[in-house]
Image (cartoon, rainbow, N blue to C red; front, top):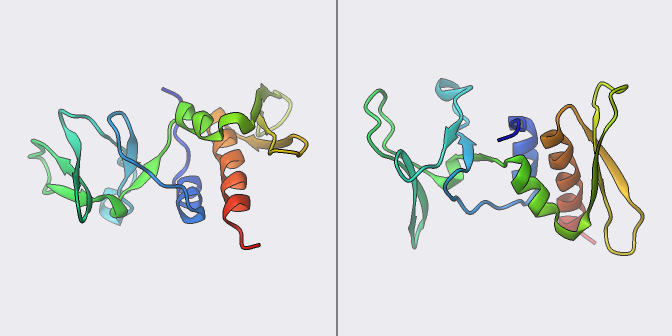
Length: 144
């Protein structure tokens, strides 16, 4: 399933403009002190996305151990999986390499249309993908 990206990287991706359409298998956190360190996974059996005209609500089915029935999507922070990050890079993705001689050994190379490859490092492959995606999203949403 791959390693999780940090909440810091997930927050940076969200703030840069990455949008999430919740689907089964997606992982997320609820950035509240009392839920620190708890990662949730959308599943039709336990946590389900309910789509309404006013927005998406993540419903917690059958959770009796603590009082959380539902949370608005905007109150949850998506932690994209490695495969989702790679898919979001799309045609810009060039390669994933490992450099064991570096403290951030994973390197993702991406190429924007008409540009030369840019390399982005991470402590995990997921972090390298997330860092590359963050750079692309920031460039795409930057004021001209």
